[in-house]
Image 1 (cartoon, one colour):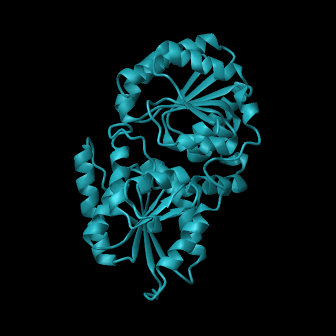
Image 2 (image 1 turned 120 degrees about the vertical axis):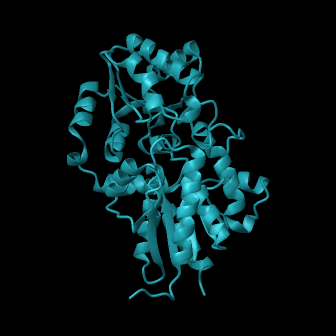
Image 3 (image 1 turned 180 degrees about the vertical axis):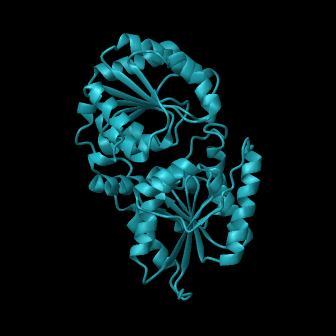
Length: 378
């Protein structure tokens, strides 16, 4: 029988990063089952990659909204997500909704909760670039969350300061650390080689500890910037024949059309379909350098003391730059190739050994759950 006296916490996820970063929170809530009821709802925004991530943590969703349709526009996705989330919230009436990050799922679930007068807790609150269109639409999504959320779980003091500058009450802001650090600690404890796919295991072995991990998929990268990145990779592959550039390519057809024809056939550029989260973590643990436009990889690389060049014009994660783990790469051919070459030749990974992780200590989820316990107490 369901104990309706305990506060009901409903978590919404839609993409792989959300699943990874909310998994420690969900597990921490379920360890406190004497204090909370907890349910997990998936919008299915990135169904296959989301499911892979949840399996990594041995988690099943309680409800799948299955909102995705072929050739769906961003507006169509948002409308479908708001409507589906609204129906769930109206029928189940949780005491609080928890969301993470900056996706369409986050804004849709939070807007639906606002319409139902249900408070929202925003995990990883306060990240900003200051440019509404970069990253797009994530920067605007995060800005909207500053008004929609009741509780703001900021990963760092910099993120908390951003919220205060925007007028969010200090009493509503809690600096917790980033839950991705918690997630990586969980996975590293349970990791075994059998979890790694044959293709990734062979790629890592082939690299001879000279693996450069590459990802690039963001909307704002399409067109000119992605052309620059692909051209630079062609040059770098020739310049560093002893390195293996491993590039899992996003399934977005627009991304693949720009990448595959140019890089396919280069002997030391290994292209693959998207890989599982365990595979990605294994690559990170072995990589000499990461080249990425991903926000998550900027946070994950420091846990492995791997340097990361950010293939974007802005970043909402300045902490990694301050700590020396990351830098914004110039998005012109000569500047990008020169910067990557300098980082490869400097043995930067060795220099980062022993440096503290700027994103947390692995206890963020515990802090969030304790705050919720206090806020939701009768």
